[in-house]
Amino acid sequence: MSYMLELVNIHKTFNIGTINEKIALNGVNLRLNPGDFVTIIGGNGAGKSTTLNAVAGVWPVDDGKILIDGVDVTRLPEHKRAKYLGRVFQDPMTGTAATMAIDENMAIAARRGQHRTLRWGITRKEREHYCEMLKSLDLGLESRMSTKVGLLSGGQRQAITLLMAAIQKPKLLLLDEHTAALDPKTAQKVLDISDKIIAENHLTAMMVTHNMKDAIAHGNRLVMMHEGRIIYDVSGEEKMKLQVSDLLQKFEQASGSEFANDRMMFT
Image 1 (cartoon, rainbow, N blue to C red):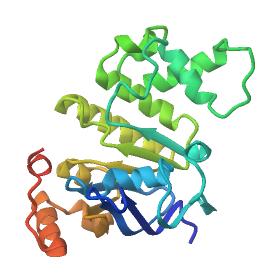
Image 2: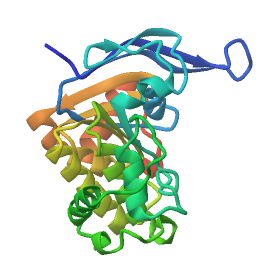
Image 3: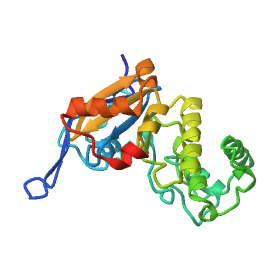
């Protein structure tokens, strides 16, 4: 079996030897098949975003191995892993350049990693391609390509960030609570766009969320984390039948404690 992502016994502790020492990842093992879309849930400090940061190479892990499509990237710095990854963060303002137009932002993403020259102009062919991509969002942005991104709403910016993250068809798409800062209606729209982009581009994706209903409704696989470990991993038909009450019960069974994160329980 050729996995798109392999995390093998990943450990990470922050502030070692101090009173603030924190075991963030404690032997995480995870394998994703090509095309898997896994949602990751857990309480605050469970290790969800830390896992995404480990994959992205934000900092070195203490122990274990990380492979992306068979390539050992464990010791590669973040900038050298970037060619394998697309990432969307929680803050809609961080994924785009506010003072640049929509088409300019998309051109930067499309040309990432290419040899740079003094020539910058966007060709007609490129602009037509971006127009078709924007049409797929159904937000009317295809007629506003010269608009500065800073004038758009948070949801519009996050939708464009999704397009930019997927434009080079990365090995992995990392979504780190990318709808948490949006109102419920806009969040649902961005989630629907995420589903569409992942499916149409046959991407392998990991989505961290605090919303149990979203974790159940999206993706083909769900992982629950607690205290730096994966305590539940479910996929396929079993995942589709899950209810929020089932997840709360699984958490209590696996962790031995009652789930107390109100934000996750009621969002």
